[in-house]
Image (tube, rainbow, N blue to C red; front, side, top):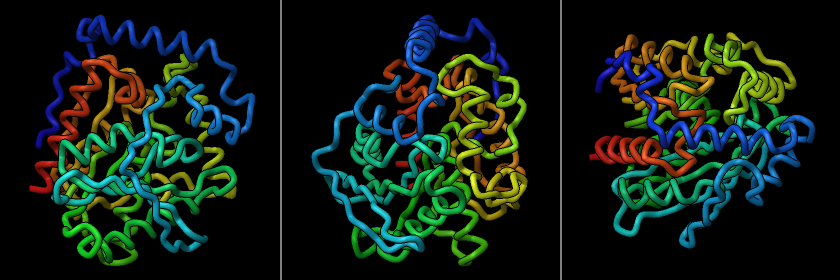
Length: 319
């Protein structure tokens, strides 16, 4: 595990022609769509579920199953994709979408890949979404799911080797969940954290503040709006339960931080990876030239390289 960063990855000539073409396509596609914030989050969710947004619509996994567990605010749905052979471990997945959008069934392709490539049972959490269910409801659901998994993993999946992770807001919720289990329950049950393009400082890091208006999946205004929805009923942006970059990070599992250089949340990963390592935890930082926010969602050589590294990281952590 290494935090060594090659400055060359930030250079313009490090960006491949394929990545340049993809970014131009993403920008033109999103600019042709209505302003994201001209409609309600519920409408945006419906459009994305029907494949009308910028993201490719992934086919649903035929072997996925959905169960419900008790949560502090009512039932929490979990979407489970098991590997074809005996599970080597269990991956608790928290989806992205600014704490406001998306659902547990909208990344089946990537989660089935983890099940098949890393040999893990994947449990994706359909946590409550803002603004209808603002902070702390989403994090509460994730905490409940993690505690359930700690109790039930051995009986249901034949293993108690656990990993956690997600992308964007899901990476944020993964770190918040790790901290809650450590601080509220005295538990350190996860061996690894797979953290892609997380938002760890809701007061906004420099890259988030300075990104501007370019509609490359996520821009400064989008982040501000997502935070506003998430903290609709209040919440201190410096609170470690809201912005985990301010937390004492000691005792947390090995982590892989993945981010692209054209991501508004670039600094969040750079800063959090450094703090993770400084706290004595194993950390690896993978920076991808020209990658936009959650570029892993768009088929490309860059996405394949990132996904393959994640698969390898998770498989190795469960060994």
